[in-house]
Length: 133
Length: 127
Image 1 (spheres, rainbow over the protein chains, first blue to last red):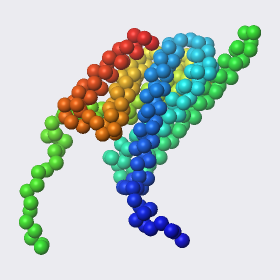
Image 2 (cartoon, rainbow over the protein chains, first blue to last red; image 1 turned 90 degrees about the horizontal axis):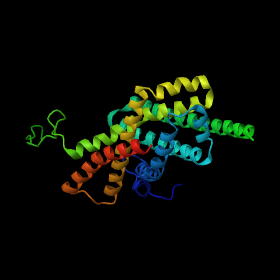
Image 3 (cartoon, rainbow over the protein chains, first blue to last red; image 1 turned 60 degrees about the vertical axis):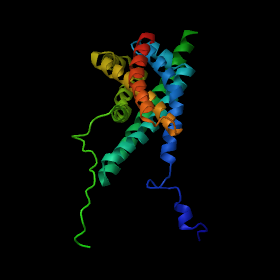
Image 4 (cartoon, rainbow over the protein chains, first blue to last red; image 1 turned 45 degrees about the vertical axis):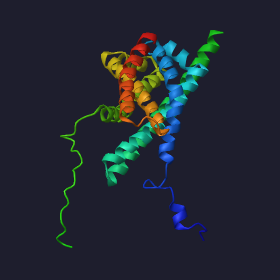
């Protein structure tokens, strides 16, 4: 038995059925990204064009590795939910559902690949560091 | 009731005759830059994966990432990320309930356009 009335449960949820949750997520992740992205651009821009050894050396250090992981995780969620807004504006029905699923899948896959690459570079960097001593 | 008198209502602007304004152009650019950034992210993450995989794979990915195509994607993404960044800040200002009057909204639009180009150039010089 539900103790809340239908009116009370529906209040504030609007057309999206989730109220302002989506908008609030975009706001919160935007603020987080505003702090991370400039630093990430600097780290990534410095690494781009370097030799493989230097790239591994960069991303096996804690700060670049953790910053890159965080930036990719938050940016890919921000992207997925932002792209979802665009899809929901222009597509309907099955097409809409399919495109949203595809977008979410791509962004999760990109996140997984980035985390795998960072973890592997950390291990390679650790082995190279151990051999140098 | 069947023969209801048609009311002459103003039609909403059609896309083909819609006069683009600074505010509408900067708004649609926010969506375009945000979604297009996936291209730069995929190239960057692929490059990271290659660096973590093998020298041969890195050579392939690095050749693409540092070619004219890579330069085009990354320079374009750099401008896109700064544009989206400033447009996002503009949304935070609007979310606080400020800046909705037309002169301020147009100033914010110009700030996004000029600011993104300036920040892109600064980043290229610094990095």
